Image (cartoon, rainbow, N blue to C red; front, side):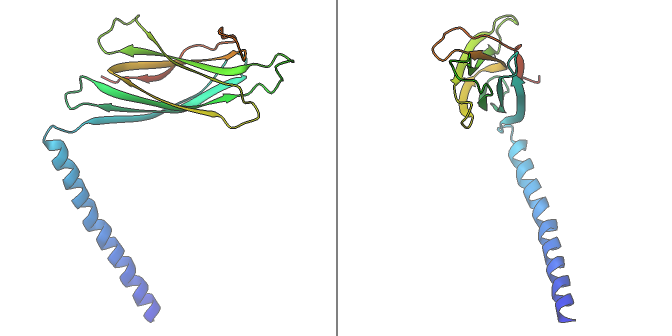
Amino acid sequence: MRRSIRTLLGVTAAAGIVALGVPALATSASASTAGGSSTTTEFDYYGPYFSANFKAKVKGSVFVKWNPHHDTNKVNVKGDLYDLDYRTFDQGGKCAYVTFKVHHLGDPGFKWKTGPTYRWCGADKAPRHFDFWKFHVDGVKAQVCQIGKFSHYPTRCGDFKPVYFAKF
């Protein structure tokens, strides 16, 4: 009898804390946004995207933080690059390669600037993690390819795929 009453009181107390805590959190959040000084944030995942022959892969996440006036932002792209080509270099094996293109706010629709590129030669290892920031951006896209260990020319490239596009 004692145990059931104690359990009932514990459950009731927990429900009361949750019931009282949620409105308190909601009012503090609404108070901070009511002043107009809050920022807008977006978070999303992208990928997996592959090279044309499926021997390289990239996937990750995007975090976007807009200023209060919604006229500029900071975009953080994180991801992992996987080398899925298990052949040796003597057998024709290649490394994984990803290139990003960035479109800045206010630029014409056709004007994409080259962003960072990453290479990973590690089919028997963990993926390579990357992380970069870009500012004043409304679009990011990625292309996954393969590339020779000492080459400067990617091959077997897949199509450019969307990583982030601003929602206006």
